[in-house]
Image 1 (cartoon, rainbow, N blue to C red):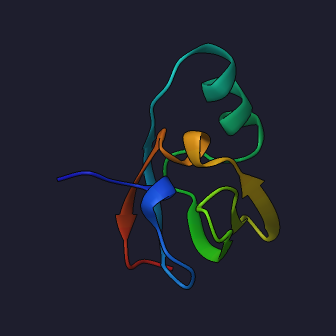
Image 2 (cartoon, rainbow, N blue to C red):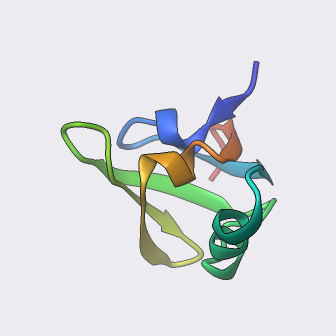
Image 3 (spheres, rainbow, N blue to C red):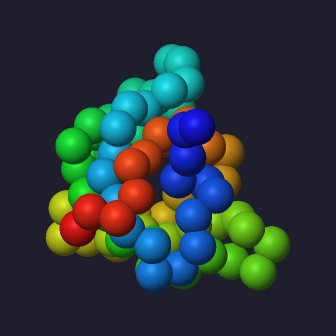
Length: 78
């Protein structure tokens, strides 16, 4: 069963497996460095689950939950 970044909790870490989605969302994620093989750590999740703050490639990145739901991950690697 696939897991997506949008469902992660603070403190979880992992590796991006693939980026789904189409068009502008997919391109925006790639431009921000969310690419297959990139490692991340979830820093914060807002009380209602949107947005999500992660550390990726040495910087903090804030994503909407809908964007996080386009990012398939593999847990536990950092």
